[in-house]
Length: 358
Image (cartoon, rainbow, N blue to C red; front, side):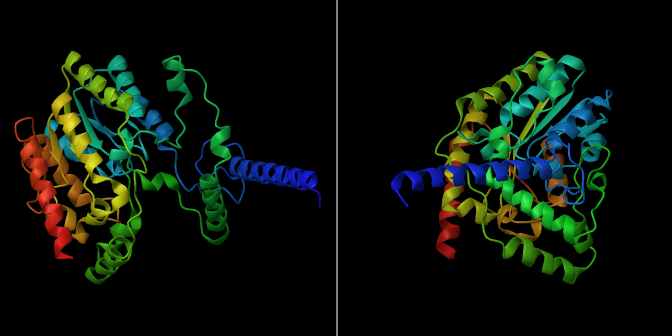
């Protein structure tokens, strides 16, 4: 085969593979981005596009005045705990892989359309990382409200990352009964993980669950980036300004990480500390849950290697709003401008001691 024919073969093969991947991703639609084709191979979606469902949720509850934001880890937070403490109707508007600029627009929309009393934000490093791109679909109605340019999802459909989810979706639909996805969320937006809830009913089942999903699972999360995104930090500052202008309360906490995630090199925990410094100095005090003590080293406090438990979530909300955790096992430290430097030094020392003890 001549060099020219070989080059043509490579180009045609590459384009054919890319076209096949794009078509498969578009038809199976594992993220529920277009919902055009409905068949036995794609009935179950790997990821529910919570950006859209949460937009629908907030518009169907116009009387709500308190709101929870964050990533999939924020989905664990219970609005009813907030309601019990504040007597304000609350919705959980967190969505998977949420970025700062995304929930800034939701919050801006809320302030422009209703009376807002409380905004609660769970901070995740990737939401402020330079280069991180969300795979979610921003609601078209919200884009239209802010007169944003239309975005085209062709690059996402070409993604091999999505193709892996396409394959997973097809396998699941061929081998499982498809669950009702609406059963995974309460009517106020909190996610319900049935396998975890079932494990809680039996001590042996729970210990097995924790061993399988927390202890034995490899650390999987990494920022992959070397810096924080200035625009995303600015988005958080704009949220603070909106709260001040509208006399609303802003509560911020760092989502707790299991120790595997904190000590993995790829996580760049120093960036999390830089993010903490920025927020405390420029936005507001932060309830930091990554104290590198029992909150981060006890496996039973986590649902998996990345998400914390419902009990932990309830205690975070309680401490955030009242100053005291609902359970002394779960606690964070309120970091202010006055104790910031000393606190970070203490955390660094605890990490060194933990690494030395292994």
